[in-house]
Image (tube, rainbow, N blue to C red; front, side):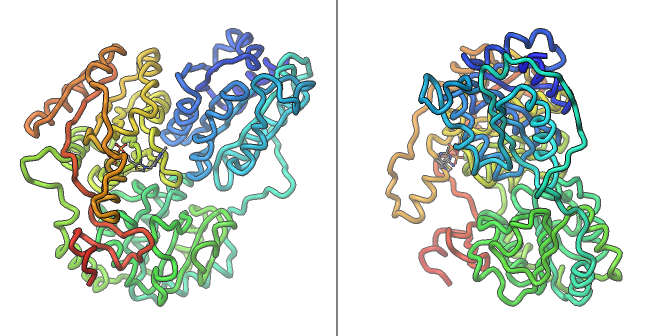
Length: 562
Ligand SMILES: Cc1ncc(C[n+]2csc(CCOP(=O)(O)OP(=O)(O)O)c2C)c(N)n1
């Protein structure tokens, strides 16, 4: 078979049914063979960054391996943001690029970029495949690496003439890689030590992270939390690992987490981090997270242990498996006083987390209405900024994979292409893309992809006329010195209509619900331009560099800290 046919055959073997891609000179031999492999759908995006985020959205919505393809040089470098995003958020993805022919590598020919050099630090692994016979082993390994252990992006770069070279097609799925052997089962002595700490703790708290969702461990999380009577806080990416109406669920902690979650974390005597990487946005200033607490940290990636927080008991392993081990090792416990302490705090501080009830149209109000109309079955994709934090606070994220958002890298422009990917992966679910007016303008060219592929994504632009989150920081930390944060927009309604997309403008609270229902009932993509208040701020907030127990709920607390 030709190298091109081998690539397409490999995609089928590793279960990829959709590739988000963009052609160019060096991948033409691959595109030339595509019609002979109709089982693999190719979706033509409008920018390679969009292909990358769509592959991420596909993977995040479904749990399956996502795939993006680009040509050499600028096509390949346009993937870099999405690859980095997938790396930061551990998203199982395969990125394929073409490169110049082998005899031109290293000669700075037309559209050559050392893309494997560039992607080395932003991938879990990468390959430059120099012989057609090496393609199949590279794809089998890449799929294995991307989807096992701590999941992540793998990149395969293939010179043009390798697509044209013939080789025997041999498929071997029994992968054995020297130096790569993810640990699934937790060390039993460590598990027993952890169980003892859990048994003894008076104020334990769980930080449930993305690993719970990635590792399909939601059932085990709930069982564990119930058996040790321990309240559960979520990281941003961990939202959905426990239903928000569960009595032990206390929502999100972190920079824009709730007041009670952040103070519960600060007052606990045992912190149990599950499938999370002890990130600064979630935990605030590390040195003052909670110096008196013991720490159990369960994560599949050994590199995460003792990186930011030194754990009393670090356990390397698959969080689902380790939780199943752990739950056998302690007797049922309960902590009613501790729960009451958090409940009281919650009752005293409901204000800062509530939806504003004034006449103005707030993003929080719009998002709460969308959540109400869409229910937890719908998928929520967000951009990055204020609308993202408010979505995390107000959209009742209660099921795994309900929220698709860029956590670690915080990539504006993620929302529209990731929604494309989510809609392709899960055609029976409603997909709501909650967009910033800034982020939307970074990748809005993917509206064409949406139209071409008949993807009925519902887009809600939270149009505040500002790069809202940056404006908030300039207001609070730079004395209201607004520099380059007021952002002009096209007429979003006309813009959508130019793409052939139904569009609605809403500037009044009373029109919100009818617009949402109209959008949901329309059989196709819809864009709603919500003209929300310009200068709302996200509260509570842990100022950058502060500790979780320094969470503030209003600007006055910032000026005169208690
Ligand atoms: C690609 C990229 N560039 C810059 C930033 C820095 N940044 C973080 S939030 C933000 C403003 C986002 O504005 P918008 O999309 O309108 O959302 P809002 O905060 O108003 O909800 C910016 C510029 C970023 N996160 N990503």
